[in-house]
Length: 239
Image 1 (cartoon, rainbow, N blue to C red):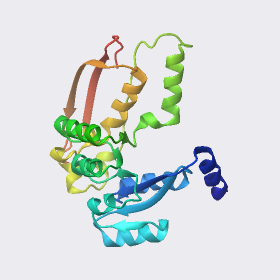
Image 2: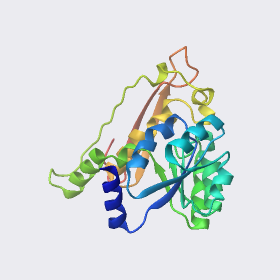
Image 3: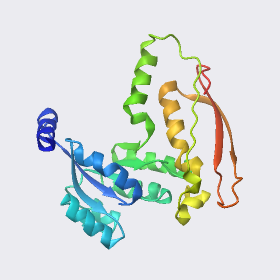
Image 4: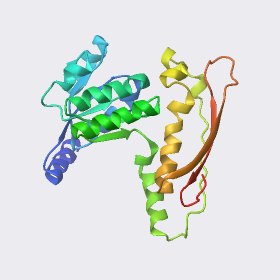
């Protein structure tokens, strides 16, 4: 069945995107099954600093493996790169890929500062590549359906939005960089993009006003475990 679906996908699109993934960790393990089952994607390469992970990846996907993003991006067969490395590497790895002419999908958060995000956009424009911040809720069918209904106007004008989320993120085992806010750690960076990205899509416009707060009350973790924000769109819609 999988082979049939893959063949139908190739026939419909005429070609398959040759994709390489950088950073084969927990985040990658969550997205790899979807990549494998998507007919329009050909997973041709992977890069990581862990030799054992690379060997497992090579055997599972029959793809070429590299121990650095530079080597992967020098592979002429790779057309696009999915960046799933720790947050602090999102900007430099995106720029490396862009400078080698590779399209990029970078995991959320896009970067750990506005200056980094701006540098990523500049590199994408300069090298004429596509840059997408992926693995966010706005790509889900349920959010896309909400967006379609809002735009259709069948339920009337969108007046306000409210999103809340509670998880056990703070209680799970964490690596050092996940507990360092300067490296994009904590729930504001690692969970906030899901809600913010969803609101931006559903709101359908530019934001004119934002205010927010964070709370760091759990003595067992040296990072904020709570965040809240008020967002007002240009048309006055609050979230």
